[in-house]
Image (cartoon, rainbow over all chains, first blue to last red; front, top):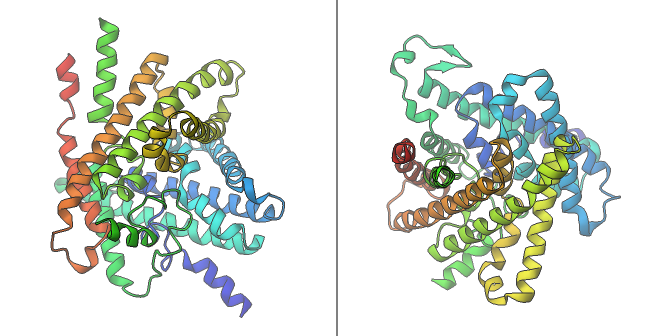
Length: 231
Length: 199
């Protein structure tokens, strides 16, 4: 039984609670770096590493950090790991470091990481938090990989930089541009909606609970009633 | 004259060509979340512009006179996010005390901006692009105005979506993203305009 639940913690991030397509967290990097598969994978793995490390540290310190200053403490821990990743990438993968640019530093404000810290790591043991980090990070990487694959194949007619013979001549640059990013993301969410119809957990009380925009966000179910009254 | 021209180019290109939301994908959460009603979209946009200006005014000197001087450039991410978070709190307290009217209209949006990636993105990009203080301020003003423009335009587009007949699985976020794609496409038309305008 115990093992089962650990396995489900690990696996839920990939599809059922996929942070990008189901919970719609961390949209900025999802749109920004997915014009090619290599950038998408680099971003996904970097964010997953930060997520796993910060989950472990935050859950280990969960009894030490006072409740009142927990968010600033989480941000410092996350920012520390982001800086480590930046330095490592700059040293060993300088090309990817240049390609990702500012977006690497912006992992700090990626709501997936702070969200998991607040929703999961601050309430669970170190092992469970690590598994959750792997699952969620893996789900994030998977989502970015899907986006990157669609956009690179259609937009540049290549995959991971390798040219695809026929598509190469009929590439549609629209997909590598900003507008194409929004479009592909919208279509992929619609596809996931269709597949997981009724099975995926609702956003209610999960994705929104920790989002800093929840008080004014009109997508938040809690605000729907007041919005209707206002009408 | 040349300085003025350079500043104008920075301003116009950050508002129209390199729009933070539609071209660089920063600040997508508030863009999708707070754009259903025009007044809220405008309020959020104004608050973000304001915080971007204040944040740049504080982080630029810190980077130049403290981090660069002492060779602590690698602390940039940690220092900037903490400075912005503290700053937003300060601004909120000051507004509440001295300008209650402004606090009433912008106050609800301020806490959300702490983790808005557009603000952190602007401060980091200003350093990266090697702007001097004046250029950095103009660039953050432009980014803020661009964010405001995108929010207001998009609020208008979304009000049309309410009456549209949307396929079941596209309801909600997917159709919003498709609409954002079209708005973003219209901004692609500005590429090249600014360079030609001031050439």
